[in-house]
Length: 392
Ligand SMILES: Cc1ncc(COP(=O)(O)O)c(C=O)c1O
Image (tube, rainbow, N blue to C red; front, top):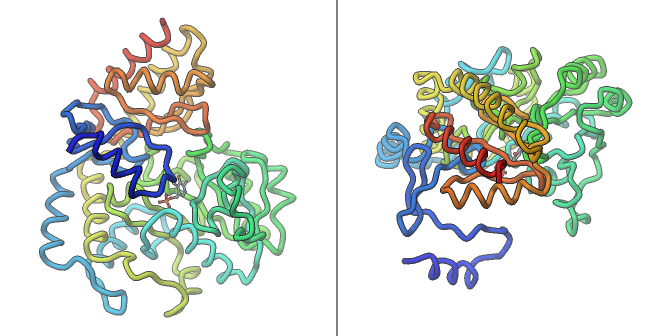
């Protein structure tokens, strides 16, 4: 089937709720994708920070085949061995006391669970979130999302329990967190908002104020987690430990799975029946999550993200001095954003012409969140494409 036929079927039979690019891929290997005509692309998007081990990783493929042939799904009415093992693996990489996991199917669901848990654990009803944040598309997570463009048209559904403050404003945090606040929810680097890292002052103030006023700190690691920023979790750059952490995306390397992590004490507020999902942590998804963690540890991919990411950001900064199209290079590890204003879309197109996929977030920032296994030649190819673009 060629792309014309896929486009026709898409327009005829699918909701048109995505602004899709006119590209269709048939297969992937490592950091490469191949379209229906066989053209190769360097994938620096990785399904938006999902395919951290790259495409068709042999360990993931064999885990899926083995587990699918054994047991794919069983209800959470029963003990699920692969889920227990995945939780043990997560506890092995998360700092104490974050040793309890609850599995679900996506980032939005992980945040839903985290917000419900915070309300249940504290008995309070308000939540502080940040402007320009992104926490998901369900009605509660959309309400927690500090970007009106996503909320427009859905207002009657949005719970009015969120107080929004400017990201990186410890002063506003101070007045927003009260004795009615169940939780503060924030991203360590705002991803969809344009790859904006939190300041040390802001995260520390969030931790201190939550402690002082009895609120819980929820860190949304859906995009930044699982080694993306050069540590297992983005909050580890700040020397704080949150009360609740949410994960999804790279946890399954493409297998839909999310999780929330918390302390035994807080987790105990959810009793049997308090929360749940049919698919969450099923044997197939959980087996993949465990393999993801094992491969990342074995191949030292968190360390690679830190090392390659900082070297690459340096190279991009030195390229940025030519021309002035790049106003800023931000991020951590292999989560890199180049602030390019109106040039961002133009560079995305130029990269695509050279067979490289990058993505634009916040309307003005070129985001690169490649597989953590991305090769040095692929990084050099992006650099030369950028250099040619800046010179032109
Ligand atoms: C920080 C953050 N939280 C939550 C989500 C929502 O995750 P999902 O699309 O899996 O529901 C995203 C998705 O981009 C995200 O970046």
